[in-house]
Length: 253
Image (cartoon, rainbow, N blue to C red; front, side):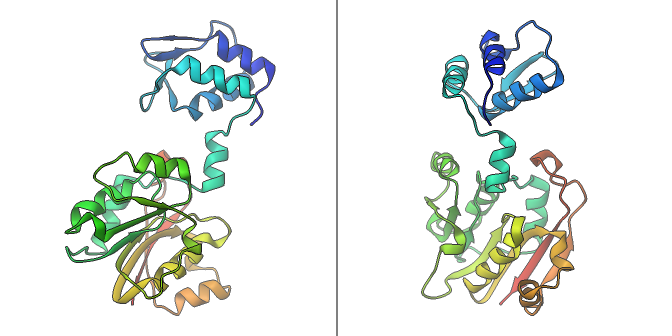
């Protein structure tokens, strides 16, 4: 998003007190407020009605200096643009709980999470394996990889497009995943993941609910593998930024 001169001025007139950002005491129309809010969200600030300020979701070292740098650059990747680009909608705890009722991770299993995001699923998988080296993480977005590598309880994460990753032989006992949905990426990721499973292996994946009804070649290929579908509750991803209808897909090899 290009930041207009007007929006830059509004942002820089705000002030930071007690590590909270306060909007300037001027009247903003809705379009101006939304543009300012988009910029604030990119550095992890969220509006708090009770405090009447934007507060950090995670620590921000110097809020005003960060905003000044962004304004000087003149452009920013908004949260919506970021989500559209990487199709990142963090997996809610309740959905992970449901996934783990459909698949059993044994101590000796080698496990793959091929769209690791910020590690919501990975952190639930790590304690289930005997050795952290038995868990493999892949994530396309380098920024998220950097965040994952700060967590000493997780293994190193490979920064790559999962669809381009190849193994000489299928080497995973279990795969747990929340792939991107757009442009049939969910079914493509599921089929590719299936090819990575050992004989006797299992995978559980989140997917768009449309995966049950589409009838193109890719979907026919999936249905030939006898998947089990489970409808997730409507609105289960609302707090992650989307109201898309989703299902769980389980495959056994």
